[in-house]
Image 1: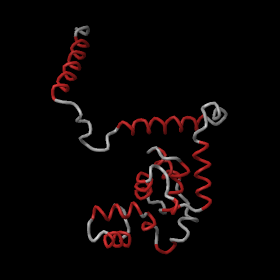
Image 2 (image 1 turned 90 degrees about the vertical axis):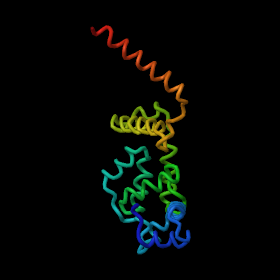
Image 3 (image 1 turned 45 degrees about the horizontal axis):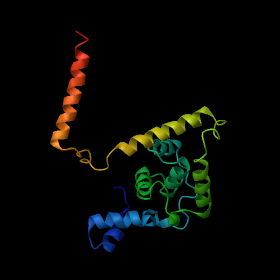
Image 4 (image 1 turned 60 degrees about the vertical axis):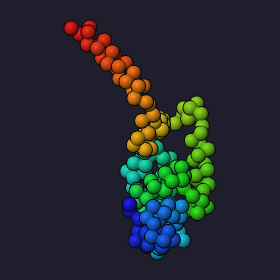
Length: 176
């Protein structure tokens, strides 16, 4: 899962050996994931590779927040994604430095600008925004649980299947 031995040990101790609870402890206390040698200043001097930021942006996260998360976790994409997902796309206050929290609020307010406000920006930025929106829209439709799509009764499924079969048959008839 990408957790350090120290974080896993501490979380397992707090959860009395329950692995599921330990994962919750880690996600609820992301400061456990910080390297122990510099927990006071998380990732200040770490330079995040641009492809890592782009990877998180492709997943639907804000570029500034993605960069902050990657700095905090020293480029560990898995930990950054887990934390951002757990906290709804943002970083918890205890992981943000004062400059990070003002940057985050500025970015979130600027990301709410209307399309006409951003009309003067470069085409790449607009394309990137459209791509992020498209990915976010798709992610909303993907079920979180593998059996979430099973919301129809067998009779309703039969009706849907018969509809599709009639469409397919209709498409095959003109091609003869």
